[in-house]
Image 1: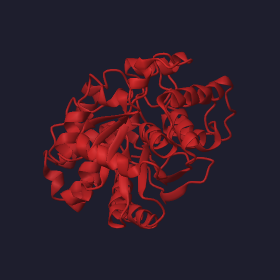
Image 2: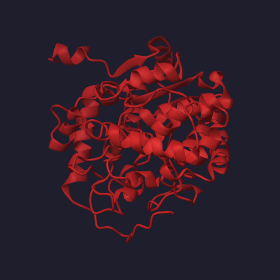
Image 3: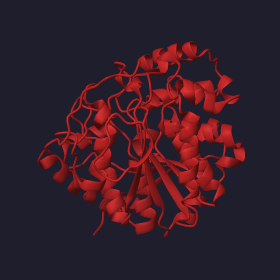
Length: 385
């Protein structure tokens, strides 16, 4: 006999614009989405204190490639073990792999300026890695990346009722903060991140230097959003905005998979395409993001778009078999590689329950954490100047 307390917990939480969120969720129930994950690098992730997406600063640029390899191959090829934070807490790519497996969905990966490319199928949209935003010239090919994202979005026409757009970008919450401030949102101290406490002081210091270098005042980015991306963004952002804008024009709904980074994408989408571009768009994340006591993602979502739904997979790792997964409950890692949205899709198109998700995630990490893989490439870091 099932425990009543477990039965009563919903699979999906509605944190902002709940009525519209429920409408979209019901529209998507039973439907199979496309899942597209944009991989990118920004040298901003190498600034001490801004990112915990990787066991060390030296290996952090390999995280996007390793994430793709975990999702598609069941283990990393470019790293000796699963991508983890500096405390050894395993990254979220295993959650994504587990959820997509339950839903029988396959991920498509697109790279936009990587230091290391995955040994998996990956659409190559750009070769220039993102620079440190403190220099004020972070993504010189942002307009070309936006156009390539639009071309990818147009190619999705008629293939599914909605598309899930995910990301893997170490340091991406800092570039998200920069873009949100440039667009006029009061986002300091409110974005989330992969570390407990979210490293607000370090992120704010970096972003203030970036805005000064780019000679941007809060709100200036609204005049030329793509110009702001060129100066203080990361390569994922113009691609994701382009995909989302073209997908909406093609009649597809869009689930932006992530927290702070996808709020920045939503804000850019509105700035580029107008407020109507957010119709049929929701942000999908995890419970740890919407309940993050060191952030205000729900409040930011309401400011980015009063009718922008923020929905979350109601995961709970407090009884997970793996100690590293239980650390998610203490505010570590929280999200990434579209983990929350992948779980939402599994619930909607496959009818997965929370119990099934938890069991499948535990089983997936049994394999991922059991034996390290042997790296098949060498890597040396040369930051762009």
